[in-house]
Image (cartoon, rainbow, N blue to C red; front, side, top):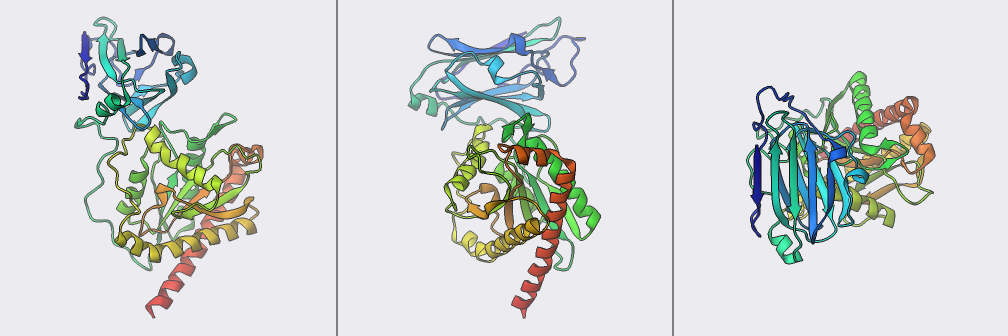
Length: 410
């Protein structure tokens, strides 16, 4: 069975074909596998062509996004194991390639384009005997204006990047109740974060977040939530929304980045600021915030979440509490022998810290670009010491925060 569509210059069409286009007995399992050996992205005349060989037909769609130009393909979940950019890409008209889970049950491939290559044709062929499928996409060559006009996320019900937030009111807060902690393991799914020495930031931070959750629950006095508990992509905006949905008292984002500066080693804690404390902090914030963009999220209509008088007023109370949390965590890190940077208290414009009413910090637990930090983060005993320090820091800050609140009320 075959379906092939030619795209107009300014209309993106969502294609949801192939999920039922299969012969009886073709062995449909619900999870398609990519045959990397028979898949390729190559130059094609003035443009680019993409061929993906799949073990079965699945629902799919394709569209382009601008700023920077990129091709986005969404699928009912695909097993990407064995597929890598070096093996699939055979043209310098493609700058990069990422693939992974975008949300439970759904996968995404993002192709970074070296120029304005608008969609020309796309089609899926399904073999009626074997059920195997071949997806073909052809991009033409156009002007930046033509590419921008034809780009955007199509209005396709059921293909949202993330389910809408729960409209039910958040649970009420009890001033004397447990501390509600939202732990945010950085990156995930299609966004691996830093990658060094066979380690990925997304995997290490998920392990650390789970270990921290267990330690807090065992200690008592905490309610704990995770922005993600699997290897899945969660947009920055959604991470903040999840904290609000849970009526979290505090938000902690966990990261382990990589820098070209060989001297960067040890933990640091960031709070939100419109201006970065140093050039390295500015670069980290920009890289973290570009994760949404590079994962195929269209930010063209997004509002600036730090704009507005009400948000600024809310932060007049929240920001000093976040600063106090960062300082307390670092005090405990030092006392517990956790290595820290020379100037470990820093600030930058991380979008994930922009919840106006929730004290939020970003903990860089170490740098994967440093061999010692990589060893530490890979060591369960060292992570246990870090978890103990974070738990102690949260408990100390919570007690101090309640005492300060009591003084204000008096």
